[in-house]
Length: 213
Ligand SMILES: C[S@@+](CC[C@H](N)C(=O)[O-])C[C@H]1O[C@@H](n2cnc3c(N)ncnc32)[C@H](O)[C@@H]1O
Image (tube, rainbow, N blue to C red; front, top):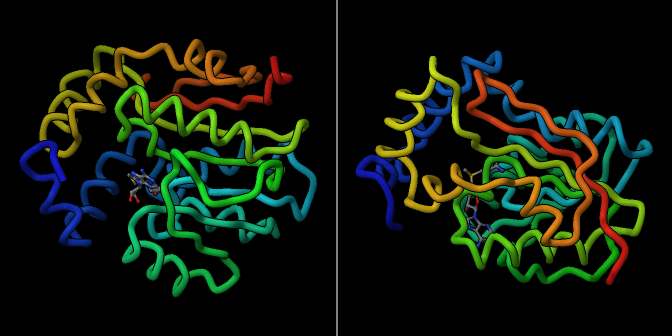
């Protein structure tokens, strides 16, 4: 696992990962609020009981609000240990181990997809594969909710740069230079809502699939 000097440590020691997340989420009101940012927009846009895919679900924190609202949630991640923890925490969560770039799931099988705090981990080509794969997996009237890094305003610029240097890979720095609205369009999505949070350090999007060309 490449990346900043503390990244490997943070992934190995849960308490460190959780502490870093807790501190960096203060600007949005805490970890629980951070983890429900994508779910809130998805739940507002979908009917009750919708089929939702949490792409790169990790240990299931961002799936929790979807499950609590009665959605049928599948969590996909590459990391078996994270999936084990997610399954233990959330018995109603269906877990799938696989690559977000090429998920082993049938086309059109979800009403909604969320990608919470994960897209910045992918190099450009893989990031586009993930967004295009999500487009294939969603129904024609489905929705995508996305939460990720955005270049912070002046107050949080330095802390964000320090965070990326210590804990993130170089893909996060490249992600900060990206126009995510353009990227969504290029990968088959039409943006419906967009919001900056945490002094501009986070961005949240809701999108619908563009008709196939
Ligand atoms: C920062 S965590 C975010 C977890 C969760 N979405 C959240 O909001 O708490 C990023 C997750 O992406 C997963 N991931 C990274 N590359 C992946 C890939 N190619 N396919 C599937 N999952 C991947 C990692 O295993 C990790 O669980």
